[in-house]
Image 1 (spheres, one colour):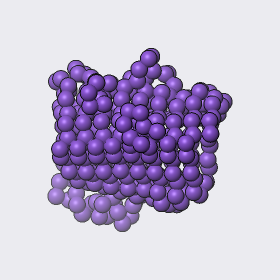
Image 2 (cartoon, one colour):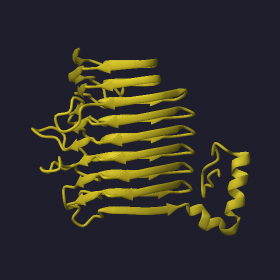
Image 3 (cartoon, rainbow, N blue to C red):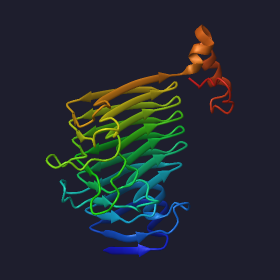
Image 4 (cartoon, rainbow, N blue to C red):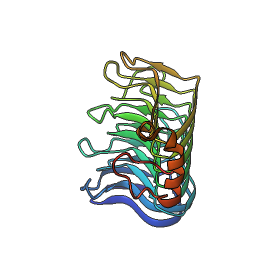
Length: 297
């Protein structure tokens, strides 16, 4: 099947249970309004089992492939191909000025998602190439393995960030990022503009990550870090970073690990732990959050 050039979306799903897209080309220019979040293949609330395989997706005015859930369970979403730089799964070249993410999966409220992205080629996606987030009270399990993430060619987007895996609020995210090539095919440099792999936990969320066997080549001076691990506020971030190869970071870090902590802990001192438990009891959604905010435990 081939879908080319649509004024809103090439494929648009809202509250869909079970979905299969196989051996399809989605190309041309899809969408004419980034503020309306139009794009190529877009789902709000995708449930059950979903597979996108051996498919080329490009031309989104904002995102090329996006799945955002606000409730329910996405038992599995598998995005896959044959692997390598000529993979049968390719997500390419969103809009030069309004393009956003190549592949985005995000869970909000109490949604549960399991995501697997493997053996695909990503090139020319303007901001994040792959972005997977667990927000609010959601639970996400994700794996990003054996993909090639490269800067664009022939006047297309160079791309900003490679793999961006995050958690916020009180969300829980468990991820494996393994065997990916970011900014190179292993021989020829094709760097992005910024950090290759980014892990971020915020608020009171939990992020557990395994980052192994990836190859990251940056663009040199001012191009960010190879791998960044950043824990913020009262979140918990547990990560195993092992066996990765990072190069051409210039004055930035090959691997950067930072814990920012919670500034409220300095303000309230020895009373901080007790106040967090009280916050959980009387304001579990953090409705009152001004001044020196205390996050729920």
